[in-house]
Length: 302
Image (cartoon, rainbow, N blue to C red; front, side, top):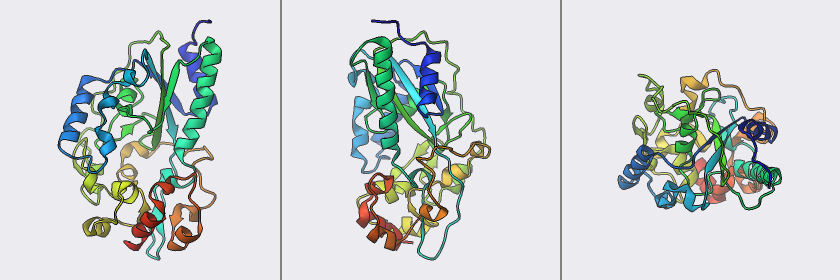
């Protein structure tokens, strides 16, 4: 058994595999984040997302017994802002215009864990996650100093803003962690651009989202057609929504992604039509989650 990797080795390996930033922290979820999550659930703001009720997400060590560290990865997916159209074309949210990020992350995570096992000469020392396991990821990312909570409830990264995807691994390895730079202090000041821009008023107050009002929820997660009020407020999205991100000042200077997994072949690939829904396979893309029937509902509501 060899000595574990240094934090710099972890960082370099993560960047080599394609991530844009990485941080390491202990796996315990801060009490204030647990309290905030429980209040959100109790008030029913998660709507029909019943999987969010799994309190396993409050204790990552139950997912990997003996876990001592969380290695956290940031992926920048920012794409150019595109206009809406009134000719039957619906805009696809920027994260969903090409490959499913779960597939991208799983491939990277497998390679990272393989490297970690070879580097330490140990097996079964890590468990990966990318929106697929019950973990309060954003709480850990803030704890690791990788960003802070925005009033739109998204993680704001100091370099990449909010157009980021989160993934990571839990591991039984220990690291000599420096004292973290606190990013818990709110950094949005008096800005309320995201709250003001939300067409459905889903951001009911700073740092509070009511999923039942969220356009992205209805265009992605819901198993039903859009409610009339939500459809009438939709400016032209066929899947997802970027509005509260597009107006965020922290995204003004953030760089576009250079990862080919998220860049569509052409601008037209960023739009969806009923004809595409009828003839195109969405396997391997985020759009498969809504399904052909759901995507048709979305487009017919425009």
